[in-house]
Length: 320
Ligand code: F6P
Image (cartoon, rainbow, N blue to C red; front, top):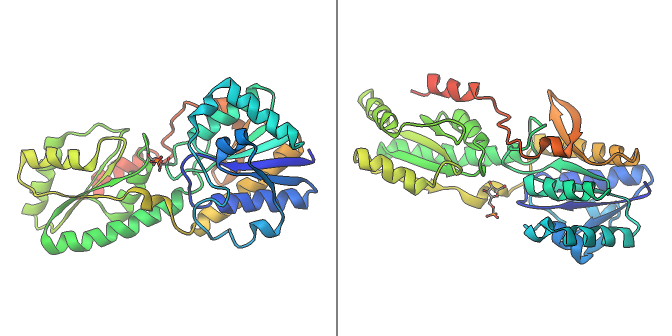
């Protein structure tokens, strides 16, 4: 291939810029031209393309968000949208596409693949919910952002001997809650992958207080229910005066961690390597520290908790 394109789509994630930079720099190193597509699949259909130079991707490795902008674009589920996208790519003489994002991005790339257009996907989402990879770009930064807040909440929780419910993102996956719960020493982690018993949790809070615990931190994954709803259920059992913090989109921003920058750089270069060999229809991943690729269709619809549930059990054993 002599000309490829790159886009970011769906929820942004720290490290997307590092991946864009790697795609562009590696492609130019290999003598391949690169076009950036603005606003994900919406920009693809609209023909919102720009040729990227080495300098265009300078000074972005450390920046959060995505310099190509992003969008949620459900219209790309239609065949009409997909064919229009391919038409635009061909108009620019672009022979392959690197799509950076999560589940929705993969679906779009899969559709293009089914129409015979070569795509390579890079997992970029804070949720860490993509099958075929141990980690997604953005997850490490997001959990460190959450951790910073959890440590701060613990200070005030201890001072007032309070119970806090902290709702974190993750869509239908519990990885963000699981990792930050363990890292912050939370008393309880609630994730969609494991059932919970509210009366047992209430009992644990009471026991903790009897044993002199000054705070109770409950990290709740948004995929289970909202923080306020959960707090109401707890307060209905006993008058804990639960305080709720919904961390929200702060979890998606910020400068990517070293780990996310390195991961994104490796993925970006690997995507170019595949397209250079005319290989498409593939999703990149990292497994046991090695870069791997799988057919996109193999990773779709397989919600994967990359953090094994042994971590959940670990927290049950050491948190009280
Ligand atoms: O997929 C990333 C994510 O931040 C999820 O954790 C969250 O459920 C969702 O996106 C929020 O989407 P939006 O920014 O469209 O509200």
